[in-house]
Each structure stands twice: as C-alpha cells, then as structure tokens.
Image 1 (cartoon, helix red, strand yellow):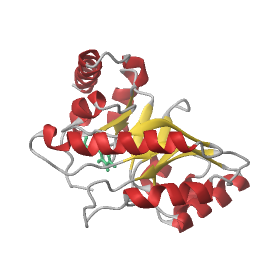
Image 2 (cartoon, protein in one colour):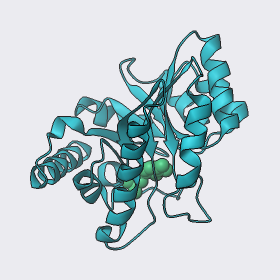
Image 3 (cartoon, rainbow, N blue to C red):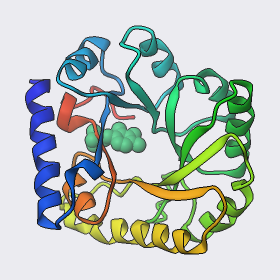
Length: 230
Ligand SMILES: *Cc1c(COP(=O)(O)O)cnc(C)c1O
C-alpha cells in the first residue's frame, strides 16, 4: 500500500514537471510521517524513501534510533527554542524558522555540535492568523541579520498554504513564494542561497511543482489519513 502510494506520488511529481518542462530530479519528496508508527516508515524506507518529515521534536527522537542511519530527518513543524538542543545533531534540515530568536537558538546548538544546520525560512504568504511564519515583508530583514551566523546554512523558503478544496486556489500563493525567492536571490546576501522552495502538500503538490517547488511535503498521500490532525 505505502509502496504503491509512493510510486503514485512520484509519478504525479514527474507529470507535473513534464507539464512545465522541469527536470523531476529537481524535486525532493519529503515523506511526512508524523503520528505514524515506525513499521510504516520502514515500509516507506524499503520502497526507497530516505527523507522523512516530522513536526514534533519528541517524535524525531523516538524514531531516530529505530530506523536506518541514512534517513534524513526534516523538522517541518513549529519549533520551540528550548527544544532545539534535542534535534541539533539529528535534523538534516529545519523548515520552520520564523524568528530571529529561533535562528539564534539553532545557531548556538549547531555550534555545540560543530555543524552547520540547513534551514528554511517559514513564510505565512497568505497571512493566515492561525499559522506560524513571517510576513513576506519580514523575510529580507531577518536574512540580513542571520547571514552572519556561521552555523546556519539558509537554503531557501517554506510555506504552508491554506487548506483548500481546489488546489488551483493555492497557485497564487506558490507564485508569491517563488517570486520572493527570486527577489532575495537578486539581493546577493552573503551566505544565503535560495535553492530550496518547500511548498506543496497532499492536496496541492502538483500545482506547487508547476510553480517551482523543489521540495514537496506529502503525508496523507503516502501514509493515509492521520488519526488526529497536527
Ligand atoms: C502534516 C504536514 C504536511 C503533510 O500534510 P498532508 O496534507 O498529509 O500531505 C506537510 N507540511 C507540514 C508542515 C505538515 O505539518
């Protein structure tokens, strides 16, 4: 079941790429495994998944030692500063950096492990009250401040688009995030690259890929419905 779902999602990504003449190898599939048991993650691993997305620090810690070491764990959920220390040696990427204070905490913990942690800036493009993330206008000032941080590697931007019935309704959101990344690239800020655009979930990843996503975060489409919403 999981292997078939993965295959389906990979094919959909390929088709979306072909529609806009993109190379599918530009798009990384993050298998969002939050709330799912390690047995299901193993199934996905056996079907070739190597990048897993979790939204709780505790869950990364619980799963980390029980699964193969070549998995890349991506922290995609809201992250509290006091919990950064638990994943500073485990996270391959943190998608949800939305404040200077959090960036500072990651910088400090990464330094303790003598590593640079790849991060994305979370942008609340639609400015939904219920969501975390910076406003579009706040992103460049933050980047200018953290570009000096030696243990952060800013790789790009992430957004969680609104929940919609029709994925076309999010196309404009994805365009805006892409445009912001292009504007940032043009500013040539030291140590900041915009190679990653993390956008698109089960309901809208094909549209996101058409609009330039390089990282889609798919949970339900691979593992099925979750018992409770996170
Ligand atoms: C849960 C979650 C996803 C995956 O959502 P699906 O709709 O199940 O694909 C993607 N991104 C984030 C940040 C999430 O919390």
